[in-house]
Image 1 (cartoon, rainbow, N blue to C red):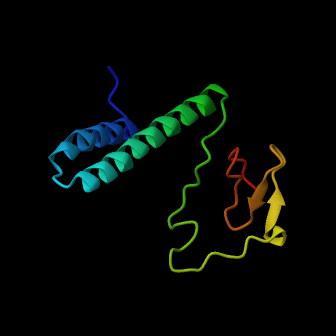
Image 2: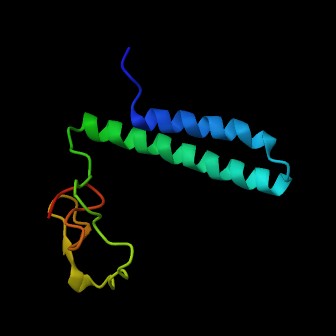
Length: 109
């Protein structure tokens, strides 16, 4: 049996956190936290399914490995004008030059 991936471990942790929401006394806080965790679980499942589809299509996942973040948190985000964007040759989506890849299909610019 293969070892669980980090994503599977994260999803299990979220499910544990969901079961622990029953111990939150305030009903509004309990419901808010439950909704947050359920939303995170749905996103984790969607992410895993997306990776599976990319693998089946033999497309590399759209992740960029970098020693530092793509965009520094302290920097204000640039104006999203069309002058800063190019068009992806694969899917015709806009590619922001500061990212260096298409956020739709993962094509590197």
